[in-house]
Structures are given as structure tokens and as C-alpha cells.
Image (cartoon, rainbow, N blue to C red; front, side, top):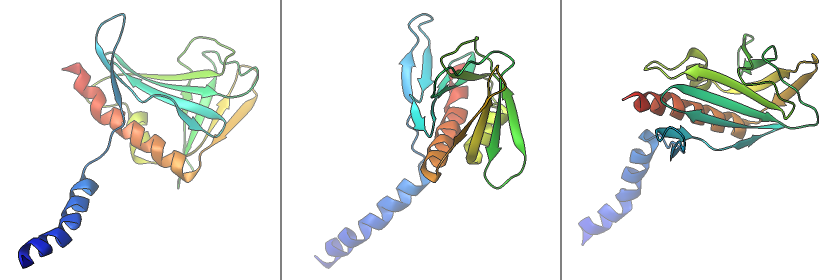
Length: 168
């Protein structure tokens, strides 16, 4: 009886140890209706002033930002400057989506066995803010709080980890 009681008291310690080593990826596996191939999607995650969704297919990884506000027009010349926490350096990306005035901004990368540099960096470093510059040179700043930084970093890490499995 003593051993059962001791085991009951120690079991939560073992459960926590197992949980801390397992990374919880909240990706939604889907089947593309047109190509009938498997893909991963994060779904939209709300940020301060925008929302983001990351999708991975066999061919590409697409990071889609939906910037909130009126008349947010982006062309292929529009840029987004990504500022990471703890560094002064920034990463600048161009819009790879079509011209639109709905506030949609895309980063698109080829899905390869070694994920794109920016995707790996997003999965290991927290993003402090993103400055979107539209076709009228007007800047929109999206600042992330601590919870949003962690969520975005976890989702990018999951896509970077699971995206290459679609190549097999």
C-alpha cells in the first residue's frame, strides 16, 4: 500500500517531465481541394492591428498577414520590415502576393528540406514589431505583445518542422 501511495504522489512529476519535452504544434492538416495534396495550416491568429496565417504545401510556405484598417493597399513593391526582440537588425520582405487593397500581405517561400532562413528565424526568435509599407509609402506598425510573440514563434517553428515532411 505504501508503494502505491508513493507512486501516486510521484506520477505528476513524471507526467510534467514528459510534457515539457514535447512540442505542441497546433497545425491543421488539410487536403487541398484542387490538387488533392496534403497541406498544413495554422488558421488565423489575431495580432494587434493584424492577423496572420501560415500555410505549407508541397511546393511552398505562405505567410499571410491581414492588416486591419481602411485602404491598406499593397503591391509587389510593398515591403514589411520585421524587427526581432533583442536585436537592432531588421529583416525586410517584399509582398509576394497580388496587388490588393484589402490589407493582404504575403511572404512566400519554396518548401525545401531546409526551411527558408526567415521562417527558421521566426521560429527561434520572437518578433517585436512589423512595419508594413504600402504603395502610398504610408507605414502601418503592428506591435506584438509577449503572448502574441510566443504564439507566432511557436507556429513558425511548427511549420518549419512539419513543412518538409510534405515533400516525401
